[in-house]
Structures are given as C-alpha cells and as structure tokens.
Image 1: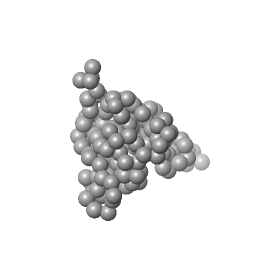
Image 2 (image 1 turned 90 degrees about the horizontal axis):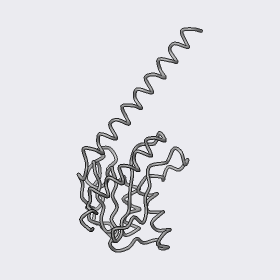
Image 3 (image 1 turned 30 degrees about the vertical axis):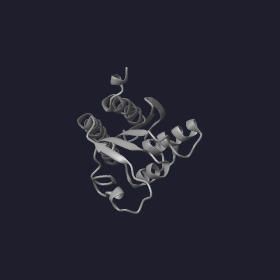
Image 4 (image 1 turned 120 degrees about the vertical axis):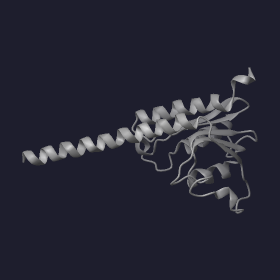
Length: 170
C-alpha cells in the first residue's frame, strides 16, 4: 500500500487544491502537509477571499497541521507538497514550523525563495534548514498557472473593451 503514496500522488492532491483556488479567482497554488502517509494539513491560496495577505497555501496548510497536532512545530517526518516554489514569507514559516522536507512543482522566477529569486536556505542565518526538491509534476502545475493568468488577462481585456464601448456611448 505504501507504493501508492509517492511524491506524485501527494502533488496531485495539491494540484486539486490549486484548482479550488482558481475557481475562487485566487492564484492557483495548493499545498498539503503529510506525516506518516496521512494528510495533517492542507490549503490553497486565499488572500483575496479571506482579506488576509498571509493566506498563502503553505501558511494555511501549516496552520491547519499545527492545529490538528496541537503543536507549533510539525512532526519530524513532515513533508510539504506545494504546486509553486514558496515565497520568502512561506520559507520563513516553514523554517519556524520545523518542516523536514518540501517538494514543489514549479519555480517562481520573481518571488521564489528556494532556488529562484532568492536562495534563503543557503544564507547560513537559520537554525533550521529543510530538504527540498523541485520539478514534481512541474509541467502540469506550470500549465495550470499559465491557463489561470491567460484567463485573467482576457478578462482584463474584455473589461477594457466594455469600458471603451461605454465611454463611446456617452
């Protein structure tokens, strides 16, 4: 039965959460925290709908996991699966929660803080560092993000067209 619980299996669960975020107009990022082949926390991006700029998928999943285990530190074997490379805020929260491992799908060139824009764990400043891997189902997650932003650009263009038409009628 353990063969079922691969990185790809858990990342697929995170992708499904990312789709929930997209359906709410949020950037499609999903996250799951697993310990002993059990989900102990999950979340998706929700800063717009929750009016909370810290409601990134990773933070939501950490909060849920910590509440479930009733501890501010995650279990020693905890792995986070997230569809997009974590930002600076999320890396900080992952350090403080003592995550063991992070598996992310696709890089984030502008705000990624593990391998892209910043490589925070290489700084030597932190009393805890975690293992991380990238590329798990990267093509699928990248396509999900690209489709979302393409749709969002089309919506903006349509709004501009409508505004232009209304202004011409005045």
